[in-house]
Picture 1: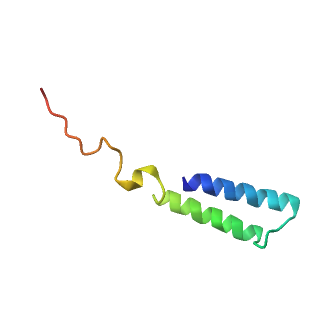
Picture 2: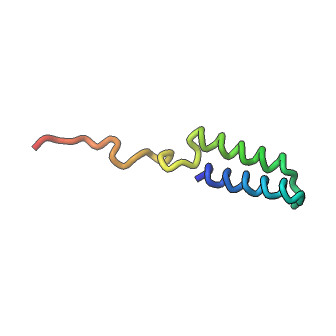
Picture 3: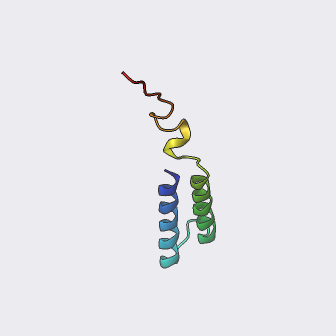
Length: 64
């Protein structure tokens, strides 16, 4: 999820850089925000498996 948000932030920073516009925050700050979001994603924050893992983990299969 955070990787998608980071991609959106990078896209906005790229468009602002191409158009030469600003919304009160610099392009460098947007790139830093995108890199921070990617670092959090790589660290396991905001991923689907961070909240306890896959549902099949810990399941013990018994023989019948």
